[in-house]
Image (cartoon, rainbow, N blue to C red; front, side, top):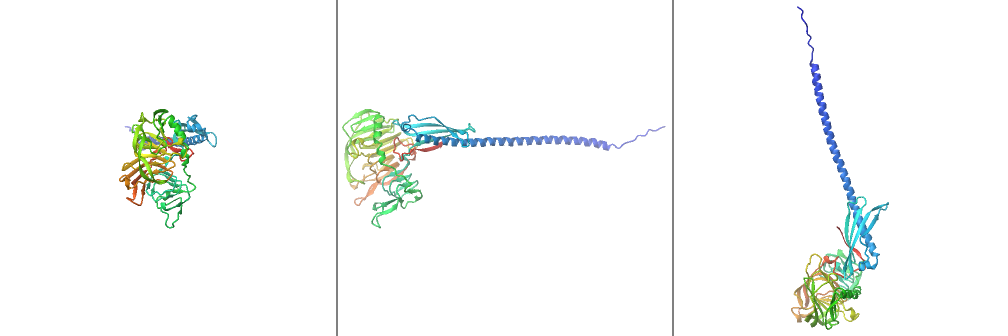
Length: 512
């Protein structure tokens, strides 16, 4: 029997090959998947970075365009300021022919244009006259027109409302001063100040009334400003400080009288006109220290007008003329027919040609001018008498204000509240602001507890609200003085508030 032999080969290498091949294939698949995953992640990161870079580029270009648009807008304001300063007088006096809107192209010094500014000008008118011009400049950059910037500015002459006090004589403040303080002459500053104190002189002669007489007995030459005040870092005097003219204020009186007679309220010596219409006639109350007009302002925007036919006197010592009879206490007055009158919103100007008493609550902005231009220079210069408290109906938003301009003085009489409060811009064009000396004959009215004043005082002569004397009680006036500055009226004063310069400027600037 023949046997068949079988050869058994060693097969592990074959099996291992297949196993290895299987494992290698699986590993290669995993690697491909991992590579693809990492590539996807890398692509996502790259895309994110690229997107971020692109967004940052857009953002940077937008920031650049916005910044450029701001400068273009400001260039538009400056150009329009230049254009107005070279324009016809009617644009600045009546607003007639004022070009608005106006497009100003800003050129690139290296060629081409950077963008455009569109300027819109809106004049603020009172009695047909421009008070200021509000400008709106919208700047757009050619590189990215979608990011405009708009600036707002006010073009006006600086007014006395920018100061707390303006004086045309030597002065010695000893109390706290809030707001800018100016004198055309010397200042001995022994009080405190939180703003600029300026004098238009380099040196002055300080005499005994300012504490400079002993020693030596003769007046001493002092710098424009000196004293014990702690705010000396804010003092400035000499040739770099320009004087504020008082004489120029009176040149406007005839024009203001004409405007009030046509469009405002005119208190003529023998009649009262409102909006050009005569409301009442009576015997003359002008050119007389014992007669005049009495104005009582009401919270509803009206003013009650009386013609004063009787007064009584008190002995008062004036800083310029000495002792004389002050006819400041009203004993008889007659309401003007049709009073109270609504103060015309388009011409909030009251012009009086006689001595005028003022009191009440002001609503809106109004200017009272008391001057007798018809009587001729030097014949009769009427005063304003602050007869009682003067308050604002709304005192915190700048929408209410009073400017009272007297051809001579703005005075506080003998009979006033013990704690008196007044608000406004008070201008004594040729006289002074203050209270005369009333001795103890008039006790208790010779001494009052306090005077709270918020606003601006403009006085040709020295301001006096309390005085000492050598007999009786030795003191007359207000024991406590509380003064504050109404900054809300600095850039939007009542109509025809006197200016401190003939030059216009951009007084306000902000972004819309």
